Image 1: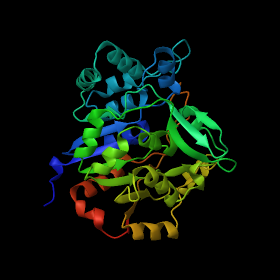
Image 2: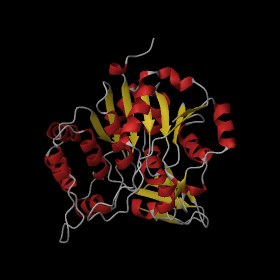
Image 3: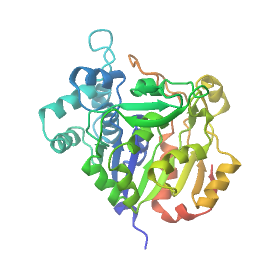
Amino acid sequence: MLIKSKNKKIVIIGGGVGAATVTKSLKDLPIKLTTIVSSFDDGGSTGMIRRDYGGWAVGDFRNCLLAASEASDELKQSLNHRFGPGQLYGAQAGNLLVKAVLNTHKPFTKANRLLHEHFKVNHMVLPISVADSKIKAQLANGNFLEGQNQVANYLSFDAAPIKSIELTKPAKILPQAARAIAEADIIIFGPGHFFTSLLPHLAVSGFADAWRKTKAKKILLLNLLAHRGQDSYYTLADYLKWFAKELGGRPFDIIISGLPPAKKILKIVSDRFVPVQITEKDLEFLSKENISHLRANLAGTNLRNQSANDTIQRAPVRHDEARLKAFLTKIIEDANILIKTNETNHN
């Protein structure tokens, strides 16, 4: 007996931009939605707050709160405002407000309830952990990169690829996040920067255990593009090896990959990005592991402009929310799609 859509518990796991996009796409569906985001960023507005006041990274959390919010567009615009030249240059108003609420209301569960009320969020948004920790990457040559900025901007895989992703301090999974994963009907992992938005979740104590125990159908939503000099060397199997190492040999039931963006867009971003590679060997591997593969035209048709006063270079190509909503709605409404043929094209 299939669970009706309105009763389904859907969990999104990722980083700020990717998880926020999926959250916006699904928030109006008759489902129970929980978004779990990475909390280890140390760049931009979030990094500024962490350097001065400590604590976990609130930027991705704030981004997803606003993605799930039913507040007015005017309020969202104000909370997304970045300050110009001055002592607060690059600081985002929403991040400052979230940090203020976390500092003045304890424990986290109380602060989060207030944030959901103030931002008019009907679903649930959670950090993966509230530990004051950062990302650390070990390279094949034995050297280390510390912090999200260093990892994200490392583009020398041809010389020494990233060998492992760790955290600078132990971090435990937030109990509410572990419970959401355990009770989920469907989990959507991604999209997001592979080494800074996705893999850090696997380094959180308790995450792998919750992942293995859940009976949810597990989906990997791939990025539209790979970063040149980094995961541009990867095919689908390379991504899956990372997950299999930490989560088990068959970590996902379904892989969703997007068709490449328009050629004119690819040409503009070719200095930094390339299409994600999926080879015949990848498809043979998926067939052997009984993992379904669905392809869809999910890319936005326009490049996104860099926000004023943003000190971090953002991805110029994003998933289109309307296309993503239509595609994922079919999967949520029909769980049997998860066990269909290994490659189905949806254009």
